[in-house]
Amino acid sequence: MKQILYLLSAVCIIVSSCNQHDSQKQTDCVQQNHLLPSSVSLVYEQNMIVPQEYSFFFKSIDFEKFINSIVENTNKGIITPLFPLSDIPLTKTDISEKLISIPKQEIKYLLFDEEWFMDTAAFIMNKNVRSYTLVREYLRKTPFGSEEQSKSLIAKIPCIDTVSKSYKDLELLSKNVAYEVSLVNESNPEYLENIQVKHVMNVIIAKALSGSVPVYSFMLRDTLQLLTKEDVKMRLGELTESYVNVDETTGAEDTVTIEKKIDPSEFTALAFIEDWYINPKTLHIYKDVKGIALVRQYMKQLDGNEPEMVKTIPILMYFSNHTEGK
Image (cartoon, rainbow, N blue to C red):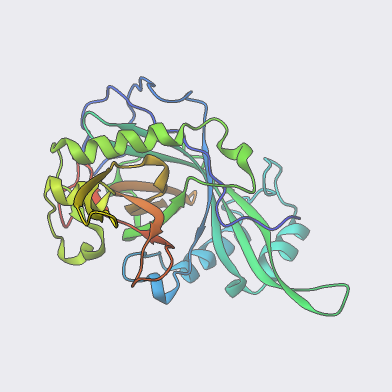
């Protein structure tokens, strides 16, 4: 099986006419799609073991406990895992070989299949998790006797709840789970063929510049720093630079001003802050989406050297049904 790419991305972001909903309850509402077909879904791989260098923002759940819960519920027959990318149940032999017998520390990722809905007027976002698949990362022996890092899909856990649950009736997995979802996939562009990424970014950038919601410095999430509109523009890439040109013949000086506008193509991913809940009977995961941030990649002049590609997370916004620090 082919290695799973770092992120498989396709997005459905829907502008809806829903009213603001209770932040403590998973609710349904009537969506009116202004961006993309409602059938478009998103599939992406999330690293559940956060590298130390990213722990300043990114945060996961107790993943070892979570995996043990899946194995335990499978052994008891409470849940039935499926073959990856299918709706076919694993046999007892498959469960033993693909899930129970492999080293649990090699299961490091989840491949989520979700639907996303966003009401940009009320500034509320919902995610519907349809399934998640366990992904194993391990050293595989090659025909030449060497070893190479490989990935494989292990088992798919369908999220089968047919009725929305109140968060108070679910078990909290973790608060403030934070992670990144890339909207660029050059290796598998077909996963993005139905998404207008530039349009989506324009919608979120416009919200950040509208002044209707507070915008914070993403790097200071634990001690939030409110940004002015000018701060937001600068962090998103809008700037004015002036240069002095000197005519070598006459010595006359002329000031040239260059204005750089915000470029939506520089924004390649979204980052989220969420509270995760689970139905312990079905292992259906619910995500309470609290905050969203833009991820920007662009060329920058560093210390007088040649321009280099840098990656930043310039701003953070909380959705209107969540207050700062909740």
